[in-house]
Amino acid sequence: MANFKDIQLLRTTFLRGPSVWTYRPILEVWLDLGELEDYPSNKLPGLNERLTAWLPDLVEHTCGVGERGGFIQRLTGGTWMGHVLEHVVIELLNLSGMTGFIAWLGIAISHYRFRKGYVAQGLQLSALPYRTTSFPFGPIFAFVLCMTITLGQNYQAFLQERIDWTGVVATYIGLPLFLVIWFGYRLVKGSRIVPYAKMQVKPEAY
Picture 1 (cartoon, rainbow, N blue to C red):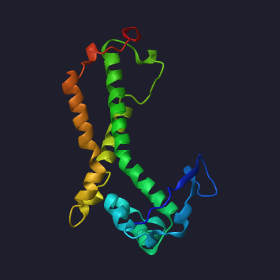
Picture 2: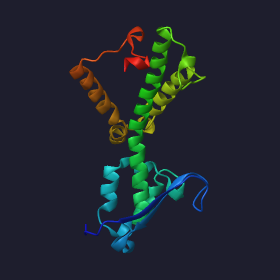
Picture 3: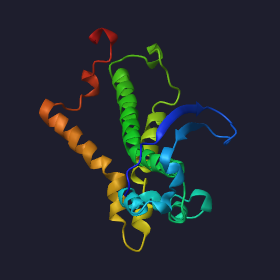
Picture 4: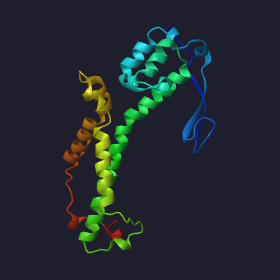
């Protein structure tokens, strides 16, 4: 494949509400394609094959076609690099979304356990500067919701005639990595789950 100068990112703007593009909040990005302005995807030998090998779940992008594989059709027929970059960014965000949900799982657990420990030590939740009327159901609901979304990120891979193991690995690779790091940290530091009665929940403890 020929070498071209990098695409130049000229400006990025977060549009909070309805705009000329859509009614939803979006990121507006101005690009300078440079030499690639004259080279749509079907004029770059090997691009489509390499791109779909690196990001196999691009097949799930319906694009303007409105059906599974729509973006692949656009790639094959020829589409501009700005459009290709858009879908690559969307797919990378989809893949990285797993770490976000893992973080929210941790927040839900911390929220629940801190307040349970606070009450277990005879303190009143009303004394906290940040209050929630949904406790304990709020963090429990958040945990169940995040767990469901996390495990169902790419359930379609299991429903095909043959399991899409490439898609499974690409989607769920964050889970084993997280567990290895978490258990590794606990093993090295010797940390244990702290009982409610021994939690340091009072400000003076810090």
